[in-house]
Image (cartoon, rainbow, N blue to C red):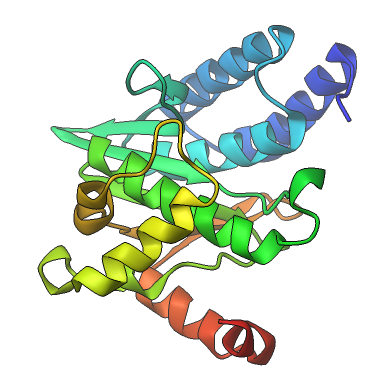
Length: 220
């Protein structure tokens, strides 16, 4: 459900007050710039409040690490990423995954979300030197194990399995074999909205922890 403009402004202002006060002028300026852009995008009905809150928190995490950050950044004619960071000559792309599943996938939410995660890793990492997925504490990312392996160690049958998964939901345009083969996942950003905190962890550690959840392990 879309909240009104006044409520959006109020929520962004409240969050800014929580994460803004103790920072230096550079961080304050960069955060203000990101918040202003999100407000402008909301007026054009291009973002939602829950997603914007997580983008703003991730933006602060990156700004504190000396990245210059843009949100809802155009990568090519069709692809827009949630966060795009530049530090020196390095480019960082972060996609936020809230775990939302549309009604069309009420009967296959786990498979759909697994495909969505796989497609994002495959598509977006090609535009960056470092690619990460951000997710709230309330969501569990179901990441295909192939993305733990360096590209040179990925087997054809593994690549084809992920290709078939993505093709089930994404065909315009389809995810290519080369995108799957060469994709890299470098970081997971765990977002605690209530505490306004973000923690960056290694994907292997995250995947290993998730694999130990019995119902996740049994469902694969």
